[in-house]
Length: 395
Image (cartoon, rainbow, N blue to C red; front, side, top):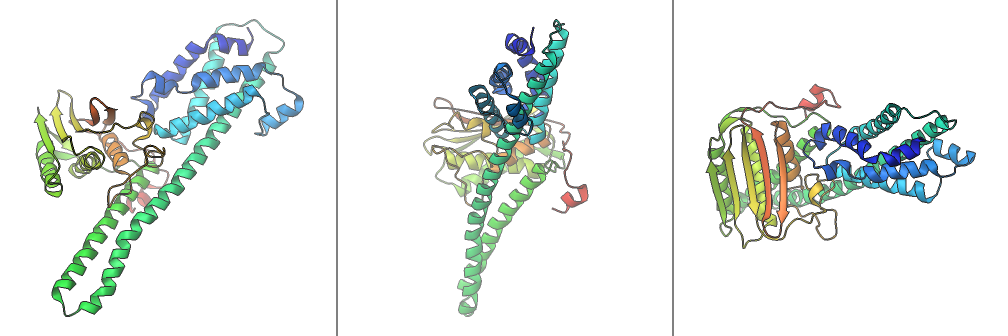
């Protein structure tokens, strides 16, 4: 059987191998089958059809140099590759992980074809060449689309950051300008000082979030220092703070089971605070915001629930990535004052750094729930940093 025909006849076993490999990648560990396979069927089928389509010597040269020839099959391959890269970016796959999927796909197809003991054919070498050309075309298109989307999102992210930093900086500048003029009015001096302090705190939070984001994107992981703590005490403190800051909102707190373990108190506080603040901002005031913390035999489950309009299904896969989420016209990203929109991303990284994970469900009937699961004895995870450790430690 010719290679292209073999691919079309064995899409399911090839996809099964793709799924196993994608699940072994950190970002794909908890994805369902539909998300893991993503656009793989379209890529496989478009590859096989592209291999079967006529190709001139000039078109082969263009393809080898990264200039794919026009045609329905080639365009279908490019379209599926673009969509796959953008979806993988939204799910948290990095560039190397996307590229490794193609390496695994190539190896899986060739291994399965070889294991089928196909009868020798005079066009086998040509088929292998066409197959590798198509996979390279798909990979090239995926990398280009991934990079372009990241560049666009980064530009938007920097524009939002610049805009949001301008307000507290303007308040500091204005207060500093007013101070000499009210040197005899102690009350006004105190008020100017408070405005400067509040604005500086806002900028400090933004910069802290940005540094956390930069550390994780450089591969160093979220720095954590686990120590014995009680999540029930932490949760109660946080709820009291939020009730004082939002006296008109209904905020509930529930605990159950054993809630003592070893975690980084500051980081867990940061993650829960981000989720509760997000629920207060986006949830409907007609429904309570509920923080529930329950202990099971092997882990602690932290849930934050709110009511109101659900998160659109198309936004759910990218809700934790600040460079991607909120990009649709019907669900624009809206940040809380003093935030640059990385609260959910940081919550996810805190969960990961404790050996846990975070999930989200959102429906009209049941509302929106963010759930963090962490083991009692967390073993901090850290990736391989792109920069040296000393450089990152100074950030």
